Each structure stands twice: as C-alpha cells, then as structure tokens.
Image 1 (cartoon, helix red, strand yellow):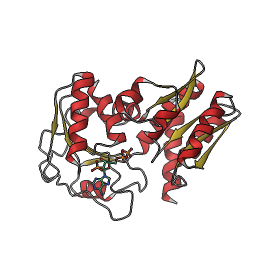
Image 2 (image 1 turned 180 degrees about the vertical axis):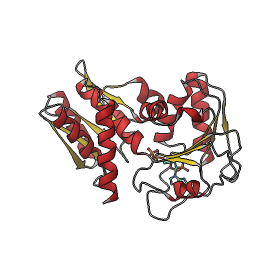
Image 3 (image 1 turned 90 degrees about the horizontal axis):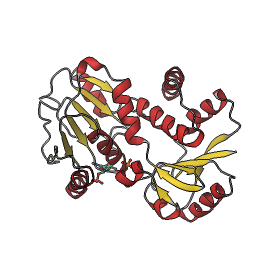
Length: 279
Ligand code: ATR
C-alpha cells in the first residue's frame, strides 16, 4: 500500500524519511513517496483512495487549498484554517485535515522550556501555516496575539476570521512597516517562507524583547535561518521547525493508521533529521 506527499516542487520534502521510519518501526506494510504532480492529477489520486489503492497523502504548496474541491469533507482543523495538509479516509469518506496547528501547539506544550512561561504571541505571516497555528493557539489559554504580514489585507482577513469563527478577540494587527516587537510579546513566530532560500531575512528588530523570550521559526531547512541567527546573536532562546515538522507528521500518521507515535520515537526521528540536514 502507498502514501504520498504531493506538491510542485516536492523533492526537498523530508516527509518520506519520517513516515517510512515509522512504518518500518510499526511493521506496517506500506511505503511513503514524494509525487510531483499537476492539478489535473488530483482527481485520480482521490479515486485511488476510494478504491483502497492508496491510504492517503500529505499536501504542500501549491495544492493546500485547490484540493478542497476534490474531496468529500473537511474536518474541523481544515475547515477553520482553510487549508489542507493531510487527506485521509474515514467511514468511506475522503477527508481533508490540517495538522500544522496541532503540531505547533504540541511543540509548545512538550518541547519548549516551561520555565519561560509563554503568554503573548507575535506572529509573522498570514498564510496557510499561520492560519493553522493561530486558530489552534486561540483555543488555548493564552494572552494576546499581535499579527503582522507583508500584505495587510491577508492579516486583516485572518484577524476577522478568528474573531468571527471562534470569538477570540485579543488578536491585533501590527503594521509591517513597524519593525519593533513590543516587550510583552514573549514568543515570536515566523510562519512565512522567508528564510527558505539562503541569505533571505525578515527585517524585524528584537531589541525590545526580554532575554526570556522565545524566537521560533517554522522553517527547518536550513536549520538556522537568518532570522534565528539574528535572534541567537541577541542571546534569545531560539527553536527551528524540526519539532513542529515531526509532530504534525505524527498527527497525520494517527489519522491514517490510528497509531500514536511515542515520545521516544519522535525524539529519535528528530535526531535523524537533524543529522541528515547537517550532511
Ligand atoms: P504556507 O502554506 O507555507 O503558509 P502561503 O499560504 O503561501 O504558504 O503563505 C506564505 C506567507 O509568507 C504569507 O504570509 C506571505 O505573505 P503575503 O500574504 O504578503 O503573501 C509570506 N511571504 C512570502 N514571501 C514573502 C516575502 N518575500 N516577504 C514577506 N512575506 C512573504
């Protein structure tokens, strides 16, 4: 049996290494591959799932939203965030889910130091990944969120959606031109794609932040983006996207197989990925 991660381009994906390791560990007779496809191939993939020739698939750019019209139903995570990263079958229906948000929140709960007491979030970006993260955060017991995005319209839309759909009102807009992060925001998260390419950086200033602040980049390749480099030079606490990558994959794995990946295997997976990325 097969699983895929689809996108275009897709060759850089680390998902096959993760899922094939877990399939082997759990002795599940299936294989996970990358598949570079055109949009016109999406219906045949969904058809294969109906015929049980395919277990499911992950989706990256540019298909996270176009997939909506080919599947039967969105689960709550995809519905709320408006983007799908996991397609799975449940009770003979083809579902789209989004595991980014829950992957991020699990990282917060399990991988970041508790002593730092994260409360207020400064979020950079308003795309699909940001939506997943923001909606999941708002359901937790947090303080406030300050959101900034290159296109102000996308940020406004996300803020309105959060207020309307889940009634969380402590979310505010921060102008893209204002490079200073206010002191009370003790966790800063880059959800944009800026930093994926070598040398790319976000023009933001960390000077107002306390030394106990956390700077998080959801990018994992490179392991240290310019954004994190700058934060490290200010002696702030930095984390890259490896934990979130592995934790969102674990949520997808559970949707496909009903199997929980334990903490020991999650940690082993992270170590393996870091080793691969350092090669
Ligand atoms: P993903 O699903 O990975 O979140 P996406 O939905 O395309 O991808 O969102 C990309 C995010 O990165 C958006 O917030 C985007 O800002 P815009 O809404 O202004 O497009 C942000 N982004 C991408 N390239 C950027 C750049 N060069 N400078 C600033 N922000 C950028």
